[in-house]
Image: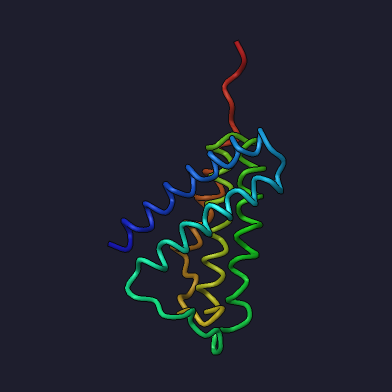
Length: 146
């Protein structure tokens, strides 16, 4: 089930980046970021209100400060993906994003950063990362013009 959720998230991220790039071609980047986050806030409020019986927002105490940077990273992600995909094409942009995510994931796993389980970067994982880099490099190829 977790793998299916990850696959659905990947599909959604690619489509979101594509849609945001389309919006970003019609409005400036700050306006696009605002539109995306206002829409996300509206959906988030609806989900929060419908998910059980929320009485009050949860306390933030006990949450590490760096874990609250998700919103900041969200702005960087939305802006970066929309900007990049509009200029690189969807396939190359997604390949670079996925490769970057994979390499970051290997580093976070290897060192057990941010309280995650430590999973050593053994050779199969490193070979997988190298293959991702090679595959991303192949995505740079474009057919010759007729």
